[in-house]
Amino acid sequence: MLRFPSPFRHDHPPVQDVNEVFEEQLTFGQRAADRVAATMGSWPFIITQSVLLTGWVALNVAAWIRHWDPYPFILLNLALSLQAAYAAPIIMMSQNRQAARDRLEAHNDYLVNQKAEEEIRAILEHLAAQDRALEHIHSLLRQVIPESGDVVRHDA
Image (tube, rainbow, N blue to C red; front, side, top):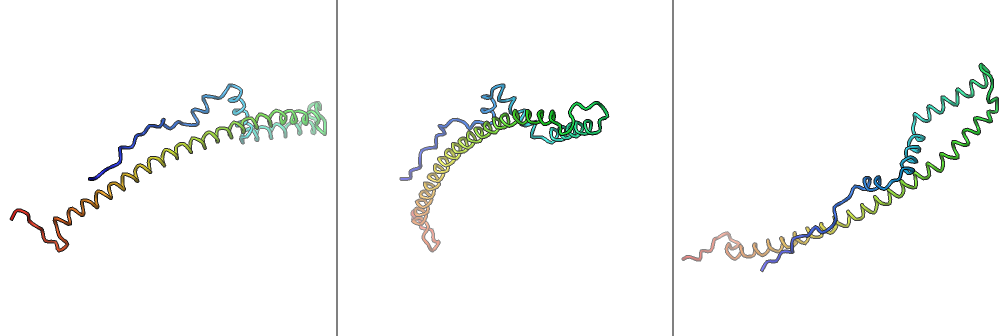
């Protein structure tokens, strides 16, 4: 008697998009920190800041207008220090959130891999059952058709 495994039951929840799940959980402050980090880590920001710093230094060195920050540019140094003092923690907040998202994505990948492994195992069991069925059918055919190729007739 041939026996095949029971049909595979897909009783696991559907796969979720980690990005959507993660984005839904972000607070206003977290979204703002991500936008600030994305802006500060862009070429337009670097180019704009470079132009502003060059202009600041040029105006104060050339003295075309009254010096508001003479060399060694203490006011500029203070402004850049304040920018760095706020930028570093904001960027770190964004990086920490990215690391948390990466952990969530890795866990989701693990769950998907577990589901795939379970389904592959079911497929392999079914293929093994098919192999056994084919062997059984082949042995039955051998009884009807001998190795020589002569057909055995049962009606004579």
